[in-house]
Amino acid sequence: MAQAQKRIHYVVEGGVQGVGYRYFTRKHATARDLTGWVRNTQDEKVEGEAQGEKNKITDFLKELNKGPSHATVSKVNHEQRDVVEGEAAFEVRN
Image (cartoon, rainbow, N blue to C red; front, side, top):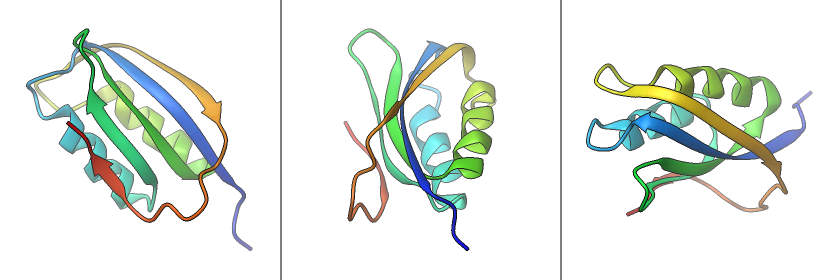
C-alpha cells in the first residue's frame, strides 16, 4: 500500500549558492521519486518544494541539511503545503 503524499516548502540558509546545491537537491529528490522544484533566491538562499511519500521527504530533509561538499548549511526551514496533483518531475528553476 502506497503512503500518503506530503508536500513541503523549504528554505536553506548558509553558503549554498555557487556550490551546486540546486543540482545536489535535484539528485536527491529524483533518487527518492520526489517531485517539485528548487531555485536560488535574491537573498543568497535556496528555496523549493518537494512532494512524495512522508518517509522519503524525511530522508530528503536530512540530505538538505548536509548539502554538497562545498556548501555550508546553517539552517533549513520547512513547512507543509498542499499536495499538487499531476506534478511529474523535480526541476531546477532559475
